[in-house]
Image (cartoon, rainbow, N blue to C red; front, side, top):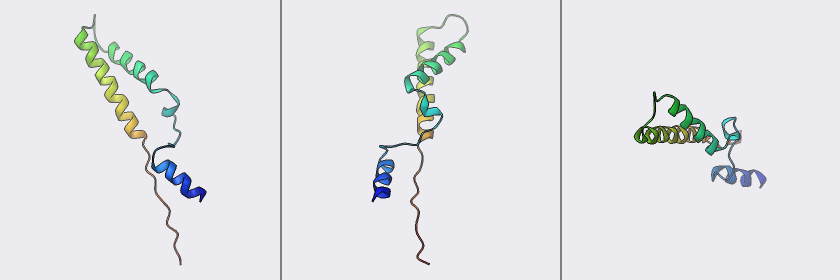
Length: 80
């Protein structure tokens, strides 16, 4: 009964595995990625360049979040 309840919680994404990347808040990661993108811009950045840097940071964050999703495989018990 407990295994089924745990499986349902994980399968429905109520629980997710703990990883090194999940210990940093998404907002902190976004700020860090935006700063990295801004450093790549030479000179004084324009509004358009800052917007592009923010979009690139959001894309990177989304890609990272999608990579964190772990698959769940149910074990089958052989009768023989």
